[in-house]
Length: 305
Image (cartoon, rainbow, N blue to C red; front, side):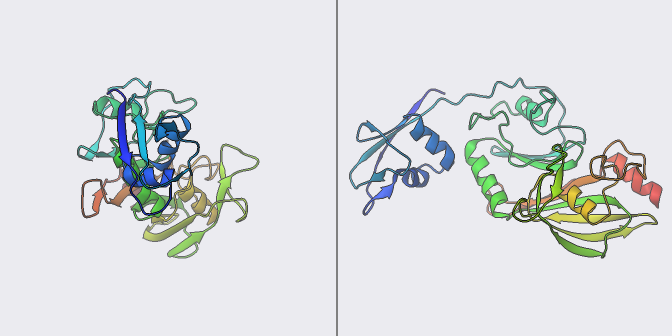
């Protein structure tokens, strides 16, 4: 795909900010992407380069936008098997296994979910110049379960807006050591980067941490463990793991926030994103997807019976 030139005529009543106008006329592109077009000199008003994002438009002006050529990221697709729950031309829903990182990062340059999806979706378009095309939300490396990815920028924006608006519904199953203080409850405790252990997150004061809310309920009680369903209302890094540790019932197998001596031999933590309800691009009603517990986690529960 080569560069594309779009021509728009502003016919509004009174003046309007350039970036606001472009966002209304070109909904397939995010506000930040459109602002990058302005910054890079790709937007002209009456033949002259736009001066700033908030440049005021007056009726009758002509705006031209040069859409840059879409480049796929420099990532090399890898033929890694995927457990696909659902797929259409705009999005894909996957049951991610534990041990797989979602997108490339330091120490994980290959073998990620993004590499696998690039191999599966040969029509996956690059957008935003990111090294994580299609990624809308994330799961920790050792958290298994449902994750949705976008196949183009329009779908990416559509899905991201739902996560920002907290209109999606995510449910996790977690086996914890001991039991929470009440059979069901709600944790409201701000989370941020641990000031001492920078690889970890921690509960911080409201002025230093970001809002984090998790609801939970007991699914089944065992002698020394509890299976809970967690419903995060926000999406902070390690949120469920940090909140459960905060309640003094850390997730089994969590070497970062759990007990030093693990109560059950498990080479991952017992956290699985088993249900996701979301409105996918091109659909009129939300859809619910489910993924059963992986064998190694189900085996743990069978042993506890």
